[in-house]
Image (cartoon, rainbow, N blue to C red; front, side):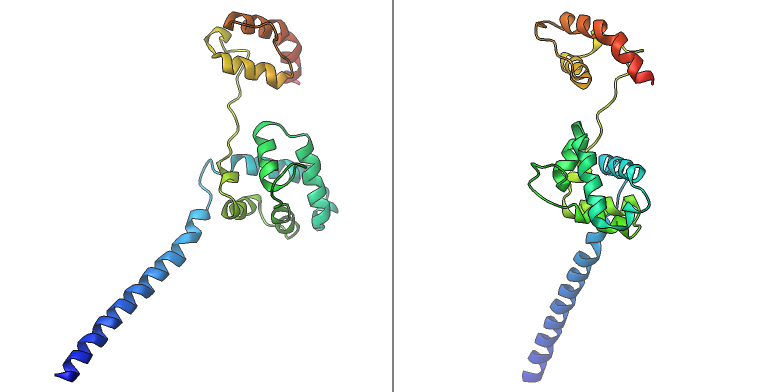
Length: 188
C-alpha cells in the first residue's frame, strides 16, 4: 500500500511539474512575437528614422555620438507627432527619458529602421502608437464642411492665428485670405 500511494503521489507531482514547464515555455516564446511590427505600426518612428538616414553622412553613421547629435538637431525642428516621438526617445531638452542610445547604437551597426523601431517598441509601446495626422487637401476640400477644430489646425500648421474669429465662417474667411500665400509654398 505504501508503494502504491508514493507512486500515485510521484505521478501527480510529475504531471504538475510538466504543466509548469509547458506554461513557462509558452510564456517565454510568445512574448517576442508581440514586438514584431504590423502594417501601420510605428509610422512616426519609421518616418523620423528615414529623415535621419537622409541627413546622416557616411562618416557620421559610424559614431553613436554623431548620430545622437543629428537626432537632437532633427528633433529641434520637429512639430506635432514627430515632436512627441522626440519627447519619448529623449531628443528634446524637456524629455523625461533618454533612449537615444537605443537608436544610435543599432544605426551604427547598420540595423534596418524596422528593427530599430521594433526594439523601441519593446522599451516603450507608446512610441509605436504614434500616427501622422491626416493631411487636408486644400485644393479639393470644401472648407465649409470641415469642423472648426480642423480649420484651427490648418491655421496652426501655417503658423497663423485668428484672434477675432468667433464663428466657423470667420475661420473659413481667414483661411481663404491666407490660402494663396501658403498654397504656393505647398506646391514647391
